[in-house]
Length: 79
Image (cartoon, rainbow, N blue to C red; front, side):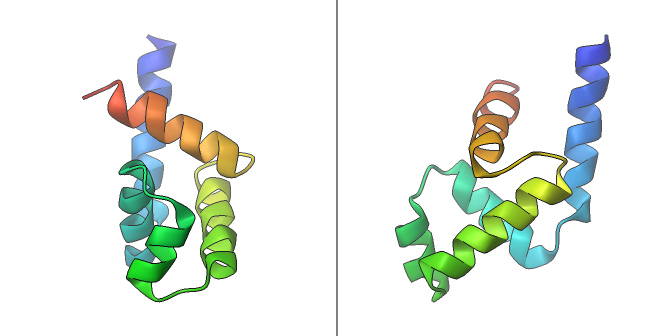
């Protein structure tokens, strides 16, 4: 039961992201590389990496690696 509650809370936190961050989150979830996403959004990879860390922080994660883990395990496994 606590695992279900934590998943629900994690999804609620997605609403804390800006529209642009939500867009980037969806692109991260599609397993695109930072380089391909930066090309698509016309951003430097460095800027995108910084935003990736910001998204992770807003979701209560410690960094990019945990963000990718969250996407893989919480988003894909719950579908």
